[in-house]
Amino acid sequence: MQIHWLAILAAAVAGFVVGGIWYGPLFGKAWMKARGLSEEELKSGANMGKIFGTTFVLNLIAAFALDHLYNTYDTHVGLHHSLVIAGIIGVGFIATSVGVNYLFSRLPRSLFLIDAGYWIVMYLVMGAIFGVMV
Image (cartoon, rainbow, N blue to C red; front, side, top):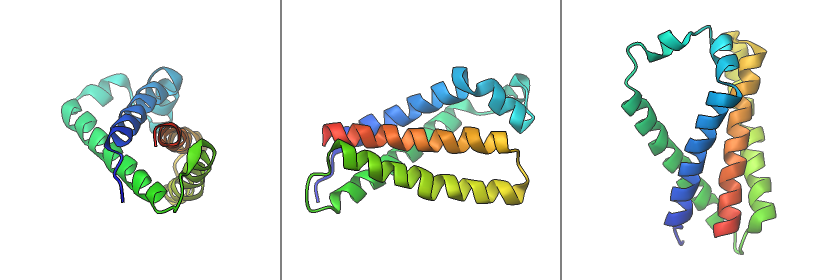
């Protein structure tokens, strides 16, 4: 099995960037409202270095797992199939799992749409990177 370290790193960085855009200018205010948080509450007592550092490590793990999954195929996956597989992961596994948790936690639908949407887009972007680079 070949590990595609450059693609893993690029996918992890891309996932981090998608999160910054998604929870920043795109849906940051809506996410805070759905969570019932203010900007002051988010900043107070938060170790942002730890949060961002751990997030990046978790993105690396997700990208590594995606690379491993693509390596299980006997042939080059390509962009189309890479996106299909990433979409299945985002919609079929992540969004459904988040949805079940949010239902039982009685969290708002708007929060589910923001968070599940992020995971779907994040995996599609990672999948595109692998589809192009590997």
